[in-house]
Image (cartoon, rainbow, N blue to C red):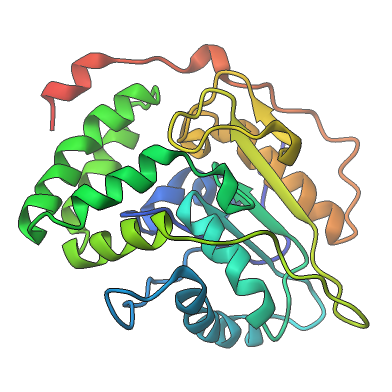
Length: 270
């Protein structure tokens, strides 16, 4: 089967504490069309997710303006990145052809109480201690999700490179997020379709099955890595279809569930 090279740009927003390397499995499989915009700094420690998304959308508008006007472009996000992508939609001057949510949620009601309680403790931590806790949690988080060595190493590197104050802001902003759904659009700007992929065993943002088109039975939170083939094919199928390309004759990629191994010994390596 030929490589799954995307025919149009796909901007993916990373989750809390992560950067563009989170989407290495997507870039490796789907090509240079997969891009990850750089985070912007919050305007204040109390800036809410909606206002933050509105400001970040200004830089996305500049990026999208440079894309080929004859082709659509696409937006997606993982975990917190998906929440921000939802909030961006009203502020994008050239709307994406579709929005992809990976291990994220469509409304505040999907967030577990654990996240809200956790923000109370992290808000009181000194920045240095919070940074140490995030670094310490990276490997157990990867192991619990069945990640391999490369994924665990990337999580550790992202945790080390993260800004403690940005982490503190992000945790609080997610915990205080109030969102009931994307705004309705009328006339020449209908709301783009939203497609969602989620792991049935996601313990960080529990599955709300009615919202999800793709549910990965053995998937946890890091499905873009643990089930990269499945997620990549899902993205590719939608992008090519919305670009008017017929891929119905292409061989399918089997779900890689059986190839995923959980290795607790990772905890001693980083």
